[in-house]
Image (cartoon, rainbow, N blue to C red; front, side, top):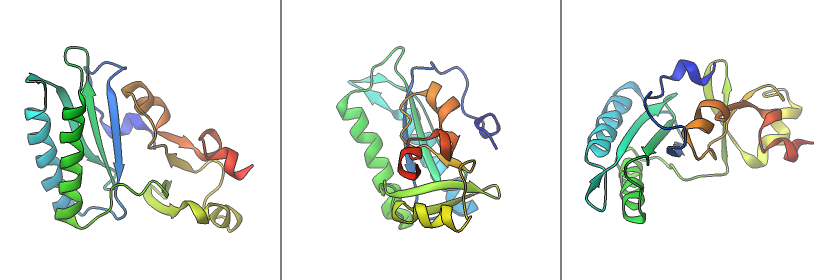
Amino acid sequence: MNTKELNFPTGFSPASRVWIYQSNRPFNEQEVLEINEQLLQFTEQWNAHGAPVKGWGRVMLNHVVILIADETDTTVSGCSTDSSVRIIKSIERQYNVNMFDRLLLGFIVKDKVQLLPMAQLSYALEKGFIDENTLYLNNTVLTKADLDNKWLVPLKESWLSAKIA
């Protein structure tokens, strides 16, 4: 699996800002449809100081909400960033999920997202549940260029490699 298979939007600057929110459980098919509709409505109305923000948002891999803002024409301000966090918090409440647990790591195992608490990383490696080539969801990427090239990376190429050396 690679990011080319994920249908990220085209026509966005590589410097576009990216926010990634990983759910602590997968969304079912109906939830994905509902959340994608909410994200579409949000991005169509996304503004920064009254100017429209070119935005995009989707549930990816049934586990992750990705928001993208192309700042070529309109810079995203603190207020517009706050509004994006509000939609994520609304999704949390509506679907009873946690989207802000940064210690819950995501890996692609058998073409599905598997979650692993950071504290169990060494154990999972030791027992062979994951290895250095397992794809890691690097949810720390900040730009569209990095989303395209550095979001799904082998564990050995991620910032986590220092923790397993």
